[in-house]
Amino acid sequence: MHRRPPSPASTGGEQASFEAAHGASAGPQEMVLRAMTLSAEITQFEVTSQEALTPHADFMVTHGVQSPDMTSGAQRSIHAMLGYVDRRIARSDRAAMSLLFGITMRRQALQLLDESQAVRDTVAEAKIAKAEATFHESAEAHVLAFEQAPPQGVKLSLPYLAKRYDEVTAFLQMRPLCELPSSSWREAGCAEMRPHFKTAATYRATTLPELIQTGLSTMKAQGVGGALLDVAAAKLAAGDVKGAAVLHDAALRGAEGT
Image 1 (cartoon, one colour):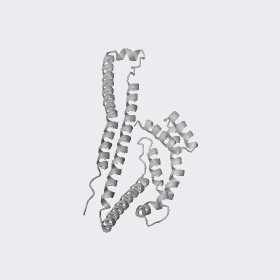
Image 2 (tube, rainbow, N blue to C red; image 1 turned 30 degrees about the horizontal axis):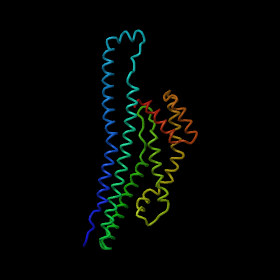
Image 3 (cartoon, rainbow, N blue to C red; image 1 turned 45 degrees about the vertical axis):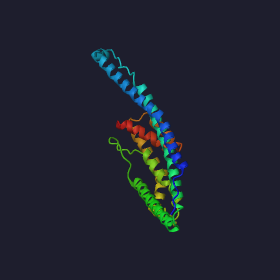
Image 4 (cartoon, rainbow, N blue to C red; image 1 turned 135 degrees about the vertical axis):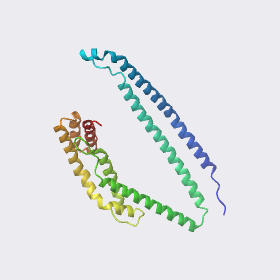
């Protein structure tokens, strides 16, 4: 049977995608290297400065002189820049991979057109079975994440709730796909999740806000958290449960010293 050769446009497109991705990542990666080198130099400067001040430690304590902080601001700026660069590289890589995936799928579709109907049916059934299994595994992971208790701090025994909010929200985003039984390849996974949707909705609407409020009250009673607690309480009162959870966890990490 005659086979279609790979399209020159496809192979050229793949090469162009690789080159574009490499070009998009090369500059940021060079910036990362320079930033890390600068961070190391700043750290060395801090160490050298502290060593130089060590002989004068008693004098500084006696006269209430604070050890100067000449590097933390610069380090924070560098780390913020590194975070931005990492996100940019990841975004470029995702775009390139998406394009390459599309080219590959197009090539496979063209090749499949040369096959008999029986072969095409077999391929389609295999892809549906794979999609069904993948979705079922994802559904089981969502249910497991929902059923597991969130991690707690050691000192105050309060749960961290921001990630919990994200997990429950991700789980509930599947609800429109699975509200009613169907003959879709998603049904096995939907059947796994469907009994938990109502409980998850109640948990996000009622239980999570109550847990946040309890955590804020407990930390306030312990004299920890400071102004973060008031801001978190204001967000909770305004219905911003996610924002309140993030601030709740920030205050809790401060109280736990983590």
